[in-house]
Amino acid sequence: MGTGGRGRGPWRPRGILLISGLLGGLAGSARAEERTPPPDAPLREKKERHPWLTVAEVTGINLTLWAFDRYVTGKSWARVDLHTWKSNLSTGFVWDDDPFSENQFAHPYAGSLYFNAARDNGFSFLGATPFTLLGSLQWELFAENDPASINDIINTTLGGMALGEALYRLSSLVLDTQATGRERFGRELAGAMLSPIRGFNRLVRGDLSRHEPTPKDWRPESFASWGSAGYLRLADGTSLGRGENQFFAQFGLRYGDAFRGDVHKPFDAFEGYVRLTTKEHSVVSHARLTGVLAAHTLHWTEQDALRLGLFQELGYMDTLAYELGGQSLAAGLLHQRTLGRDSKLKLALMVVGDVLVGISSEHTGSADRNYDYGPGVGLQFQACYSRDGWDIVTLEAGVSHIDAVSGPGGVHRVHIGQLQVDVPVRGRLGLGSEVNYFRRHSRFHAFPDVRKDAYELRVFVSLH
Image (tube, rainbow, N blue to C red):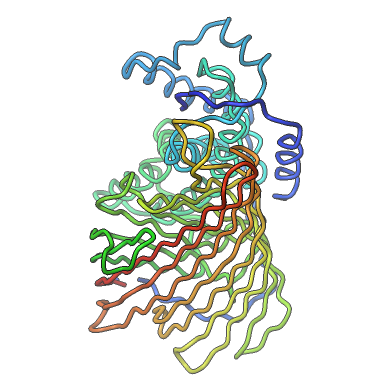
């Protein structure tokens, strides 16, 4: 899935430490229901695992994608033979120069296909991880004549884990093995669109028409979704009055309850959104997915809940003003206070470890890539006032420090702020506005410092 290009350099040993530390460290809307935490519920009996079938399906995914690229679209980098395989194995890993959207969005989606092949063959969240890594290594070493990319390995594996688990759970949510007729067909089709490999397996196994009780763990404690559409103005280094006019549509969801819900397994609670914009580099300009890997309750009353949580996040921002996105792990405190029968205040403070982040840069050393790569560390703060399951006022702020290990050398300091107000108007319909602020201060080893500010205003109609 790469075109290669100039500016590739050999991957240093620090990248090996990055990967090993990373794999070792990853051990109408429906209204959220307030539930008293029951004793730890017994987990379902483990599904029978099929490792060799999983390997065959992962390999089949890569063969199908490679054949399409080689014989249908005629990609030059898909012309591989024994000589290119030998060259890739001897060259080792490099940093590639592919477009931001390909590296940060397309590769995580490909990883989700590998991941779901393992999940549907009986493996857990962590058990599916080696197969996701295997699929990425197969592709990088044997499906391209360019050297294997370390950034692709990380984005495909980690991004595939997060996106794959979310899509797998959402496909379970829409499936109903007790439904029949048109409803059953529609649900099976929707589930296959969310998780194509699972849909294929259900067809082969004859599950599409099998009538049996729907597993209880296919349904979360609570689920909410919403959408918005409207006007957007983006200003790059100028005032909002001289910004670029655009239109957008955004879709968000919340699966489970990270603040008060039961968390027994990774991604028992997660939330995310995707934004489509009219004038950006790609149709998808923003996306974020945050899942709870583990949680420990520190304090619990009817009014207050305080938790310590471990999270995994996939972030993606690709705008005319800046690019920022990658794979992160975070640990922090979640606090929810009940203000009234239907009102809540939710607070979150997290320390973020960026495993690998791509960020806009003026001096990448490559004509084909306009962003640097590196690990980082940061802080995030979030506050939200909600009423009757509706997030009315949301405030987010964050700062991160990114060390550019692929690029001209240097560090990037990023500040982000967001304030959104979304007010119910009638029924499920709302009106809202949001202001975003982005600041990047880049200090390069061999170039002058760069400071860039970007502002964004959104006005929208929302549906909950």
